[in-house]
Image (cartoon, rainbow, N blue to C red; front, side):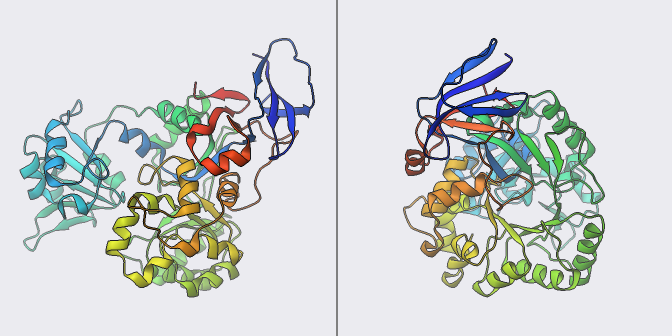
Amino acid sequence: MSGLLLRGAETGGRERADVRVSGGRITEMGGALARRPGEQVLECGGGALLPGLCDHHLHLHALAARRRSVLCGPPEVTGPDRLAAVLRDAVPDEHGWVRGVGYAESVAGDLDAAVLDALRPDGPVRVQHRSGALWILNSAAVRAASLGSADHPGIERDAAGRPTGRLWRADGWLRTRLPAARPVDLGAVGRELARLGLTAVTDATPDLGTEAVASIEAAVSDGSLPQRVHLLGLPPDARTGPHPRLSTGPYKIVLADSGLPPLDDLVERIRLVHGHGRPVAVHCVTREALLLLLAAFEDAGTLDGDRVEHAALVPAETVAELARRGLRVVTQPGFLADRGDDYLRGVPAGDVPDLYRCRSLLAAGVPVALSSDAPYGPLDPWAVMAAAAERTARSGAVVGRDETVPAKAALRSLLTGPDDPGGPPRRVSVGEAADLVLLHVPLKEALRRLSAGVVRATIAGGRLAGE
């Protein structure tokens, strides 16, 4: 195939046009364009042609690993009996390990090694909390990973100094204690992303190891991962990768809710990254973390592109400060649809209006980009848009009605480029990259439905993707 001709596509939400794609770019737009030899034709029938969607915060390797894990949390697993059943029935990997994901305390309370032993004592088991911040290991896994003799600060210990089986924010470290896993299939992830209309993603995993970076580079280079990939987990002095569809983003800093750093340490870290000409992307999910970060920026200064990841709880009095400092917010309203009922039960009523703000940030002039945080949040960008527009939990309760945004504004944030979250939306115009999504229906109808079912085809780098 030497090119692609899309006939009768709705562009700009209004007129129909033919759109020619070749060499990875939009090369011509107009009426009744003649087919060229070797050109594939796609009859659009008035379906909207949009720039491809961008998920501004997800985790590629964790998405791939989830495919070979057992789900241990809502909505499929809602009680201890069901948890016991899924762990009992889980098939171990080639090394005899069982890997669980998505656990929430609403299922069976706080897990530790003793609780997991009662659920599945035969062989090593590790279960990840749905936040991604905590692994819980049974006794066999604790022994296999030699936690008793290890000194990682994330190892939780009882009064006698014995590991409880709970391990905080130690993904990379734990991986070094486990048997070598077979390579993850990023191609399957790429196909799933394409089916949702995504042509670009930001991988927000901090401190990516060399093997992880190499596997992403390989998948982008061979086309099995057709999306553009923006990396936050490269070292502070890193530069753009070797492939034109792979880029270096801000440097990821995690302000862990399990233990915040001293202010001076955070200031020094931000200054170090800024000294390399890179902005920072800072994980903030609590009021305390956000206040600490704003204080750090007061001393370190800001750099264009500095961003707050999650902004799960933003006190009203900090909104103007975010705007004044020119900070961007990359947030995940999909959590409200997925976990909103838990928030309404567990978050103080006075803090509920501060959860995953959108409208008030936009009104104050803060650039806001939506994202999924998948696999820890719902991946589907259309569901994320619906969550931003409706903020409805599974029960039907609305979480923070004053923070809803129009569906068009939610879509707009997913049309911005990975290097400019919350910036101007990309356009379908001659000379632009041919990263596109074709819908079955006109834009107005798609905005009413907000369903991945409206996606007809995804074009990444000028080629049909996800087929």
